[in-house]
Image (cartoon, rainbow, N blue to C red; front, side, top):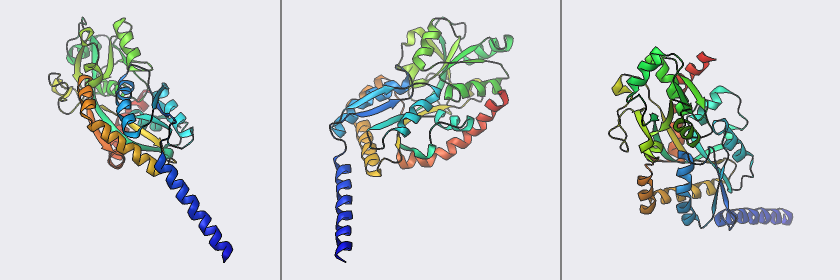
Amino acid sequence: MKHLIRNTALATSMLVGIGAAHAEWPTDRPIEMIVAFAPGGGTDVMNRTLAPYIEKELGAKITILNRPGASGEIAYTAMTQAKPDGYTLSSLNTPGYLTMQMDRKVRFDPKKVCLVARIVEDPGSFIVQANSQFNSLKDLVAYAKANPGKVSVGTTGLGTDEHLAVLQLEKSAGIDLTPVTFNGANEARTALLGGHIMAMGINVGEFQGSEKSAFKALAQFADQRSIIAPDLPTAKEQGYDVLMSSERGIAMNCDVPEAIRTKYSAAVKKALDNPEFQAQAKQQSLALSYRSSEDWNKELPARAERLAETWKLVKEQK
């Protein structure tokens, strides 16, 4: 009986110690945020803008590490393989996170990816050089019909929202486009400026926050015009059935204690509510659309179902 009492006391002491450790997280050790795309794109800019405000809430340093490639798979793999102590997390973007699982066996275990918070939902768009002959999506479609395969469109990877928008437009308009993959929106913008591609897929917020004098947008792929681009017609307004947006948020390994994930989620919400951050977000045209971990997880299956329909177009091309 004494042995049992001693063991019980030891177990209780261990649990208290673990709880205290969680309560103390984070310490003076930096938190590593793995960004799944190259510097300069919307995901990178969003995280770099938000990080100082989260740091204030947590009293910890956040280090941004860009790990682009494979539509985000490299970042998700690194995050799930890191020690689940709350000091490694990653950006998470749909549709890429969902469509890569439809396309192939991924190198990470999706069951280990826990959504922490959605920060942005940004409708897609196609942009061209400011001096382009295309002034609307209709112009681009007319040229593509007369010149099959000649319109090259930059994307950030197979199954990303830009790539799926290309496929939706091809089906809706009966045209043949040529998608070209880059590691991030910044690379695609450089290629577009250099005339190496004719158009690129980009989210409205990314376009609004870029050097707009060099480009012009042809359409936005939303049900209704975004509040950050009220003058930009939707694809549907121009007669094409293209509906695509990008969610950007944060994920942690599910093996990280829930108390830590909850604490980080709460810090994100407080950071988003900070008036100084909101002023910066407005300047950068971030389409803020917060979802808690619980709400984002509830919405994900319906989004995956819609994307599965579009993904059939990818399989048809293979």
